[in-house]
Image 1 (cartoon, rainbow, N blue to C red):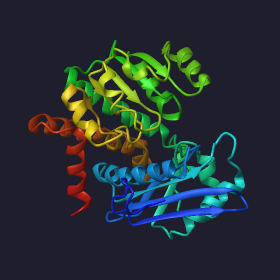
Image 2 (image 1 turned 120 degrees about the horizontal axis):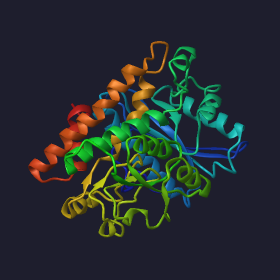
Image 3 (image 1 turned 90 degrees about the vertical axis):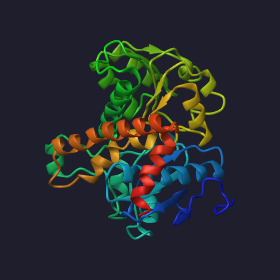
Length: 349
């Protein structure tokens, strides 16, 4: 399996593979860039169809974390980890502790947090083996309403970003009657649906798990749709909140929305897909900008955690997106390219 010649390799500083025979752990950690600080990023557990798919995911995700931290205004770098396996069937406490020992081998260059397929409880288990963890709540932050789960902040930041996109594309601040299709109503997608519902939006939802769809339908009066058709609905906003690569050569021609703004990472299958969106007249909110709420929340964790401080920082997501949209419109370049250039101005200095 090539690494240096892998199409997603982008000068990563450290890529490590690990197998723990006793627990069955098979995992990869990738640290992309630490110029601004340690490589912070979640640990994803997923039933990848191949080792190469897992490597592709961790390389792309870790790179995205570098750019995310830079545009979020955080003194952090980018890293990510993946565990190969089904979190619903394969995960064990022994495996998670083994992952903690793997993280500890990086000596603080990589700091692990929760992601798809892992939970705050899992990070607590890892913390028994390493101190290089993020996303844990202490007594003071619990008193301030924080659990350690970054999902609420990610969802709120995404909601703020959607409002910025709607303002830029549709020229409106009122979301009453706004038609939004959400792909994935898990921890983040469900909370995003709550914010949109409270703002008066009309929702269409889908998920890999029927129970998640039913929950959203019951809570928000949402319309359930199939996973393979959600991107093609005639709506104002398509919000991908599941896994990546949903915007590709097949799906983009089928889009009938004018805005794509969601919490999923790596929504563009290929860089060229950003040009296709621009040519189609679809405003795309770069994923690592709009979904930065989680790492912002983790940055402020500790005894001085204040909800109002975090929320003020989350509002900057909308400000950054507004600048990206304006620059894109001025020079006629995809929003993703504009965001990349802005981030590189920061972490490549």
